[in-house]
Amino acid sequence: MAKTKASKRGKKACPNCGALNAARQKVCTKCQKPFPVKATASSNGSGKQKKTTRKARRNVMALSDAKRRFKTASVMFSKIDAGLVLVQRAGSLDEAYQVLQTIERIRGKE
Ligand SMILES: [Zn+2]
Image (cartoon, rainbow, N blue to C red; front, side, top):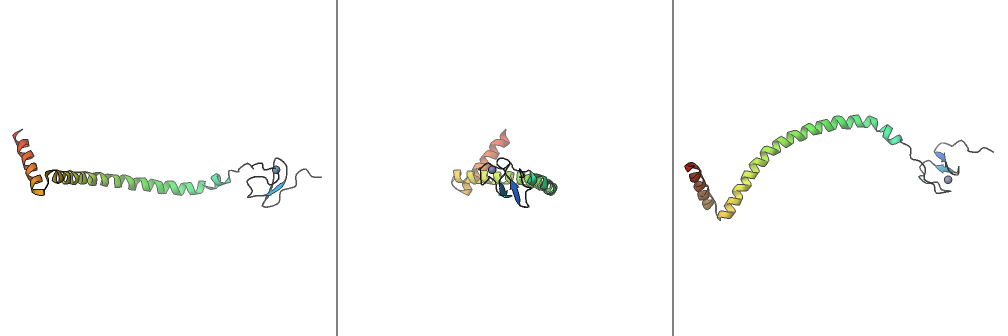
């Protein structure tokens, strides 16, 4: 008798007990031993990786450009934020303006 039958297409023999299992089976149906996972997915993915790296490089460039823009925008926003805080603290826009004038007067003396 043949020890292990030539595995049919879509079937695989269990390395532990020799029972034929469906290729998709992750665990042997007879002895419950897990099948070793073949590294076919990673070798197939090499073609896709080139695409993603090219795309990723473009993304990095876009990101750095966005960062540069965001930096200037965040500076503007921080000034607006500071202005809003000043208005809130002073109670009104007029009072905030007076505070600013006072600060500028003090600065001018230094
Ligand atoms: Zn088995």
